[in-house]
Image (tube, rainbow, N blue to C red; front, top):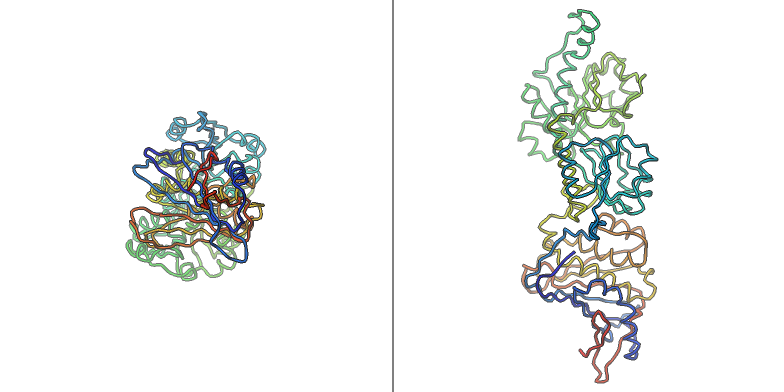
Length: 545
């Protein structure tokens, strides 16, 4: 929400294709249609209307809004108009933590909100609780399904995933319900990479099997002969944060490292001595394959019978990413026929896996119970990172770790803050002035600016205009997360045009104009006795132009 410390005047100008009417009709229309403007009396809005200069065959409505002065406008997004909760009424928001979180993170949360730590909730119990919560923090064990978002009844504004992967959160449903999803992708990077290297070394030297053998009273030196890592080729499948850290450590062990990642920049890989190669080349030349890819429809069961038929015989596989990227039945078959010599797994398709799992019980498989991020340092770091992201989101700030919202840089947010309320009011004004607002199908937004079009990021403004247009005629809550999705779902086509004007590029926007096509305006034009147009302020009083 923007608040002014100096006088700032927002002036909307409305032009319609309607005929003239009486002054009384216009005053009544203004008083009725502009009631919503009274919700913010501290923000002076003035409306002028006149006979349209447009002569198009189809009726249309054009609204122009101009920020007239911006002397020393101080703004604050901390009120969080998009993601604000009951805190604006003096009430603390409620954050539900459904899985264990480090005490350092809980302290951050408690400083801002009421925190409910309820662990091991059943799906039914989670759905019962969620309607009383503004935010939810989970790890990998809680499934945040569509049913959860539906049960929240619009109150749930943020879901925080304490970790990297978000495959246990229904992102599509979260977006539809306008719920921001944030994760903590950096704090556990080193821990996950270290665990990958630990599994690599333990697997090649049969550490787990030899340990179990000795504890059973046996001494089997000849049975547990391992293999060396020096000079061997490691294929890192996925060269993101964790994958690149694994590659660094593997290079330190004297291994030759290649990687496949269609999105990784080649120069970043070359900087640490890694060659980016094709998928087939990576799996066919590697002695070891370490998986570091997200679970998506494209990567689900990517390592299947067909893939294993292309690998070098006797390859060894490490997975500390997501269990679903491996077809576990196919891996068992590959282990049985010797195509895969060994596997070291920290993640599984189903967690915990069945007690009688053939894969877990296989003598050539080393397993750990999803310990990738389980170090004291990582747990504390993840807890703080996700707590700060969730608190920031509840305050209305857009987190750099937001998963389902466009990333708007902080400097852009600060610069556009004075225009955020203006954009929403424009959308609301348009709906108020259109007869049958639910029939709006096409909206064109024109930004006039002294800046180069490529230097003007309008995603936030577009979202707020969409919010203003849709919310008055719908029960849907709109924010930056779901604005584009909801507009498309409701058949509302929003196009944008950037017009260069002479002026100072220091101000991002000179004016914002909305064109609504093929509609009839219910706000009749009026003429004063002297023949000039009239305008009305937000209280509905009539003044000469």
